[in-house]
Length: 469
Image (cartoon, helix red, strand yellow):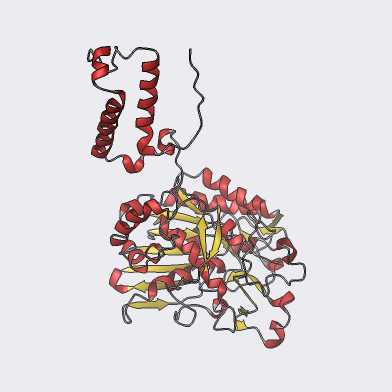
């Protein structure tokens, strides 16, 4: 009797068949079963002496290697495939350099397609990369509102523009450090040829829409693009591609008495939680719809919810907990999607909540003032502040999980939670006007820790959207 001690060590995928065969032959030799050959070719012990064990092993390994080459499976062998796991592909390993070189010649190769089942972007880190050259600035893109034009409005530091989101242990076409894999405006425009892309929601959705427009507009010649602004509906058109990138203002998605004109006092806002038709009729015919709704719900007050028509007056509303009215409104939206949208013609996305950063103590800056003067992201893994409501996130998950039409959720919340440094702070505007010097000197009351500077964090949201497209 003999004993083997087995060490659990890493075995390269290509040598795995050889290892198994060597172990099998060792057992066969020890048990003196070699005269019964696995392939039943009638070899005897005398034949074994003529053809040594190492030669047999080498021949079988060679045949195995040739077989693998023939079936073109070498590149896909991994412990993940053997064990039926689906790990995310590793980033930028030395073994991938030759593959990446081939991919650079063909950036639209299908091997770069983003597979959400294999790669989650919710877990990762922000990495500072000064080699990044933003595709636009608030000086070069004419379509950025003053509200998001931080550098133009006097912000001196620009480091917030040079942070890249890198998911843990996986690679996205739009997140790899090589610039060829970042947001490519020409590829995006080709994907949008003949299509309508519409962002629907609140001012944070407008933040994302303007980011998307600026990411692509620089490659479109003058005279072949146009912008039509409206209080509710704005349309950017890329004429050569017959494509439009649109924004529709609907902060609650459902109807309310505060869309236009905006009621700045939350106590005056009444939400028609069961009605959406007057808004939704403008979304018909879009090929890609990207929705959001969150920040307008978070007034800290109970929501005034109304059933019935506003024509009958605004009396008769009920005050509901925010999560209850939010759920009712989302179900109204979901019912419209399920009953109206043809998933073969229209793709639907929903962007999760964009966090606000109002309480500096939550990220350890005891002497700070909200997000004012923050210049670096939070580095603590899994940081989550009170600006993101997990109960509201659960409402989104529950409603989406019951829908018939598939909705792709753009989960931007966790990656945005770290970015305390990228808000407009005192470099935005208030009610359509830039802050005065006196207001800037009072960040406790006037710093905007909700909206984002452009270029900035919304560009990463659009890199994610680009990967899905």
